[in-house]
Image (cartoon, rainbow, N blue to C red; front, top):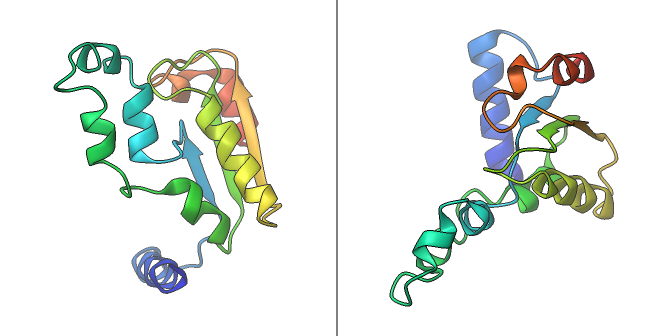
Length: 131
């Protein structure tokens, strides 16, 4: 994991001509499987026994943000709208808790009360907390 982070970091440094100073995650999720399990459409695919939990199980191990984030050697800022129904705000709360539990203390969570999922970038409250 550390090697992959180093490769990503050196690639970004080469492309943008400078070191990475931090990471901002907007509406972050703990993993793709968790995001799919909580996705609003999940109630439809869980209605039928043949499709119940099949999509989240197929995504296990993909985008394991909660495992990778604590290993990043740079500050992280999480921005999430409390009213986000696509990726619940609790995902960002869990991400921050996991980082702190593993000794990563340069993680900030900024919660905007409104902004939903894809409109948080238009929310003045979220923009202010990202400055």
